[in-house]
Amino acid sequence: MAQVSHWRGHSLARQEELFAYLFIGPALLGLLILRLGPMIASAVLSFSEYAMVTPPTFVGLQNYVTMFTKDPSFVDAIRVTFTYAFVATPLELALGLLIAVLLNQQVPGLTVWRTLYFLPSVVAGVAVATLWWWLLHSEMGLVNLALGIFGIQGPAWLADPQWALPALILMSMWGVGGSMIINLAGLQGIPTELYEAASIDGATRWRKFLAVTLPMMSPVLFYNLVMGIINSFQYFTNAYVMTSGGPGRATLFYNLYLFRVAFHYYRMGYASALAWVLFAIILLFTLLIFRSSPFWVYYEGMARGR
Image 1: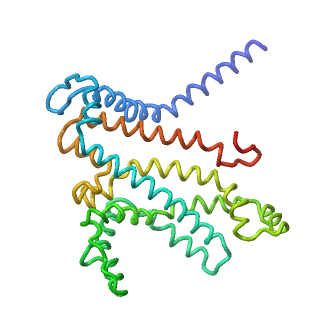
Image 2: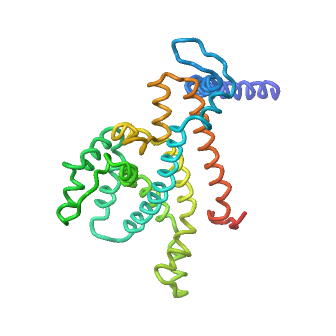
């Protein structure tokens, strides 16, 4: 009887294992066919010259050599993308945390204010880009009309090479509600006992923020920083709709240049090489952030600096 029970248990475990593979099968197939397969194909194509209408021709490292030595557009795309990533991301982090702290107070109409700040982050894509294109129009835009009320001559914004990129950075603050909600959840998870202990010690409100709020919020800020950097390096839609990389190359973001190379010039081999360089850049900065996290991210119950 014991042997029969053993075999029945073994059969049941086998059935559960088969059902588990059955349920995860679609996700695995999607990963292999829609993600891993194209990644392998692009890795192979990055070492070839491929114009889509003719078979690929192996060229070795020529695409990468050309990219780093003979392509001024690549340099401009790197400059624009890095500038945007390292200006817009800190601004979004700071503004998201500031709004979350303000909305974590007991003020009238709190739910309404939270909803109003969060709603813009839900609306995204071409609709937002079109809206901001009208807002920043040099002649009919509401931004310049509002500045004119105070006697300020607004710039040409998207038509001015000096103002086009700052305009897109300003526009990125529109979606700060997403990080604000995450920060708000983190703030509400901070034990009130810590603030009470700080008050007993005579800490001011600013000191409480530095000694209690920031350390306890560091895991949330860490998450927002990683996601912000990744999203910034993949910036595409707004630049494509609003400026098309112009004026000149002032807003030629990396993804926009990659898109042009692939679908305007039909240089799929070179575009694949660009994609892998972008992957390496994002991976490098993500790893650097993770490596730095032990020095500034505090997890309750763990010693800092480990």
